Image (cartoon, rainbow over all chains, first blue to last red; front, side, top):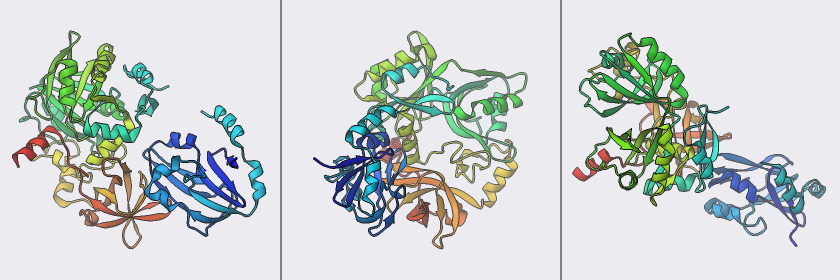
Length: 125
Length: 370
C-alpha cells in the first residue's frame, strides 16, 4: 500500500522513508488543461514548506507547485521536461516532479490521506 | 452580471467552460481542450461565437468622408462589398479600436468593432456624426466565425451557400430560414474562413446546422487567442491601445497617401515619416519556458527594454511566442533578447510575424501563382 499524502493545493506526495516524491493530482492536471512546460527545481535546493518548488505551465496558465514539507531537493525529474505526459502517471511511478529529503517528517501528519483528499475535492469547485 | 449571446444555451449544452470576457459570459473552451481545438482549426474547421463583437452601420451622404475622418484608410476606391481592416484614431494618434469596415454601398458602411470597445466606439462615432447620417447598432444580431481549411465546404454543405468564387475580405448577402444574413470571408485565425452575421433568433439553429458537419467543432476564446497570436494579429487593450499609434503598432499599412485628413493624422503621419522610438514586434522564445503578457523584455546587457503585450504557447509551433514593444533599433527579426519570467531570463529573439504563413484565400492564390 503506497503511502500517499495530499495538500489543499493539490500536490500529491509519495512517501518513501524520509524522502517525499512530489507531484500534482489528477484534479490539478485537469484544471490546468494541456501542459506545455515544467520548470524544475535545482538539485540541492533547500526548501521550506510553502516555498515554490516548481512551476507547471499549461496552454492556459502557469501554476506554482509548492513544497509540502521542509527539506532538500535531492532529485528533479528531468525526464518530465521532454515528456509532460509523465505528469499524469502515479506520483510513485514516473509522475513525480521532484524528490525532497525531509528534515521534519512530522509535517506529513498535517496532510490529507487519499480518503480525506477525496472528501476535500467534494468541497472545492 | 455578464451579458449572454444568443448561443449561450448552446455553449452550456456543449459542455463549454465559460468565463467572463468584455462583459459577456463566453465559452473559453469545450471538451477537446485548448490545444486540440487550436489544431482542429488549423486542419479542419472550427465554429466560434463572436457575437459579443459590435456590428454597426453608418449610412447616408457623407458616410465615406466621416470614415476617412475616423480612420486612416481611404474608401473611395474600395469596391462595394469589400472589407478593410483599419483603426479608429484619437486626437493624439492613438488607437481607439481596431475594426473591420465593409463598404456595402457608395454611402453605407458596415463596421465590426471589439466587444470591450463598443460603448466608447459608438459614443465616439456619434460625437462625429452629422445630422444627415444614419447610425444603426445591430444589437440583436449574432456573429458566428467559421474558420479553417474546410470552412468553404462546410458552409456549402450545411447552409447551401456557395463561396467558391468569393474573394478574401469581401461580404455577400445570403438567406437563412427566409431571413437575410451576411457572409464575410475573413477572420482572426489566419485560415480561410467566414464570419456570418445572423439575427439572434436564428443564430442557434445556424450554429447547430454547422456543427452537424463532421468537419466542424465548436472552439472557444482561448484557442481563438492562440490562433491569432500565431498570426501576429493584435488584441485590442493588450497589443494596441489609446496610447499606441498605428505606426508604433506596425500597422502603418492601414494608412494611405489617399487619406491624410483623419483625426490624429499630424501625429501618425509624423511617426510614419520620422519613425517611432518603439515598435511592436514578434517574440519567439529560443530557451525553454512560456512567457506571457506583462513579462519584461531585456537586452543582452540585462536592461529592461520593453514588455510583452501578449504571449503564450503556440500549439502549431510547439514553442512559446508573443508580441511586445521594443526600441526601434532592436526591432529587426533575429535580434537577441531575453524575456524575464519569474525572475529568470529566458533566451528569445525578435521574430517575423506572422509566425507561420497565413492560409487565407488571398495567400493561397499568391502561393499558387508563385
